[in-house]
Length: 196
Image 1 (cartoon, rainbow, N blue to C red):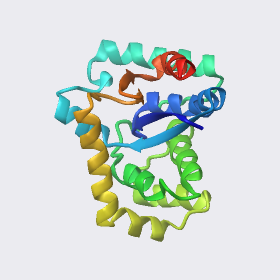
Image 2: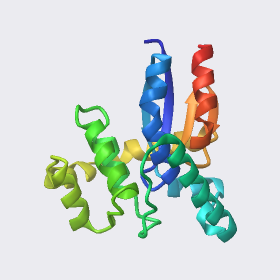
Image 3: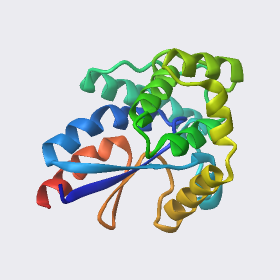
Image 4: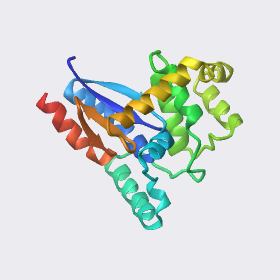
């Protein structure tokens, strides 16, 4: 498998969630490997001067409609979380902590589904612990892992690298050195992979 692409994401992004639901199919069709790149979207916004679409009321309303259109097209559930925006820092540190382990896919599913299907208030430690335990994770181990300096530094490095490479929001994809922004650009990612 020589083809690959990078997926820079944040659990707090509903568009990242929608992209995540489609990436296995795209990777399989292209015989490509996904390089998962957890980053902290709030830090990206701060570094680039960007703002969440929801902060502009008319844009936010349109974005919600558009996300629902894509969810219907993909045939996946999407329920906008009433606790949005959420503090994704511990969640993203968790993604880094489990990144190179056999539990990564289970972690991704547990968190994305809790936020964008089940409307869980993951800013509350007790709710996050409940979600993790239900998915077979040890919440005490999770707390220890996300406190490790190596995990914190790797998330910071991913985020800084994303900004340096031109990322300004999530989800962002790289096929080689070419950046594609937004889950609505997945067709371009697939086309780029098909070209090899």
